[in-house]
Length: 311
Image (tube, rainbow, N blue to C red; front, side, top):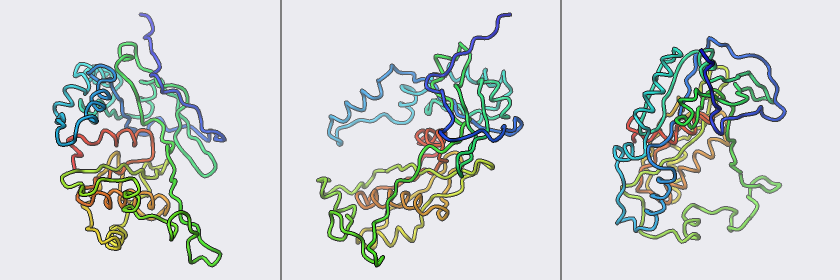
């Protein structure tokens, strides 16, 4: 019987982070959950073309697809989902979730079984104070799945983003911020909205704003360790602007959680995002999706508007 032909998943090739080194091997008996992303049912570019077309229509005249219509028109093909299920069964993997709307299948199993199924090379890496489970090389799938699978995430848990939150500079006395453009060195969200000619009379009533926030991840336990917001900080902020406190709903993707404290810069970015959205659109509901700071966490959060996480 000829050897089975495997093909690399396009775009899946990874290299180790610069100045990192292998410090050990992963335990093949540890359990892991990965996410397999599938091709769309519709033609390539169809979603983008539809979005551009909607952008040319007045908001009050737009007609949107509901969730079920979107899944049927742009979701995964049920036959493709069935092929992934058969592949999982062949390798002794468990299907945690299969979603046509998200075009994804979550597979769970031992690291040994998963790396064998997808021909993946994993190691433990360390770079300065950062440790992570790293994948090098490509993820591969059998030929019959090569046109179906467009991404596989979860093997590698290196962080994909870092905070860019900047504190105001202080004078030598440490009491007064150094002036920039605004008189006191800063602009409120309302002033920024005015500078950008944000339409007056729109407060977001009846709308929902989704924000994605990334948690730090402990590479040893695979549990999130920080990033979040304090409701008291939000109440003080909106009270100072004489604005009502918006409705803020925190949601979890891949174990993400509201965990303020360990990193003030990360907390600052989370809080700032909520404050800006809530100041510009105080009538809107704000859904904050917390997810691990990994490629899998970010991509899964983008698809977490499905029925299970509907705010």
